[in-house]
Image (cartoon, rainbow, N blue to C red; front, side, top):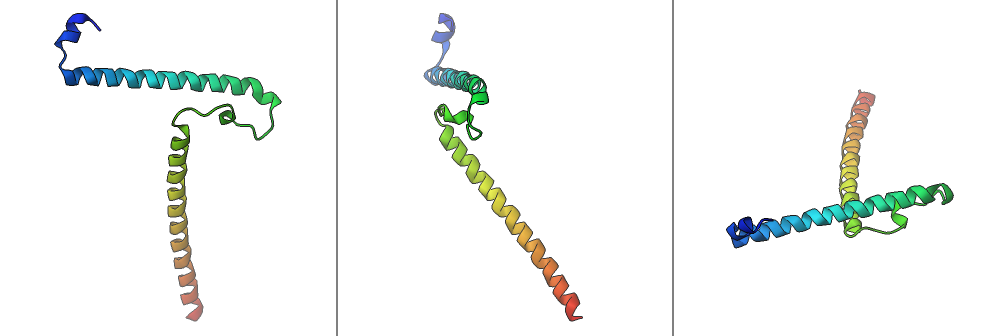
Length: 102
């Protein structure tokens, strides 16, 4: 950042700039650690058990929370699909019962 630009910033603009740069550095760091883990996995995978996963090396910060959120979303989708299926088959069974009575 040039000195002239720095002095032209308000406090809020400066804080936003610092926060943005911090997020950028965090994302870059996570990406590098992720690539490192992928390379480690690729080099060990041929010699490891079948159940060996990439995450067995180490977990990235925030990864467990992200995986938990993904699992929760998937459970909601699965419940919704199950509800739709139950409703569909209930209608089919009701139609069959009505036809059997007629």
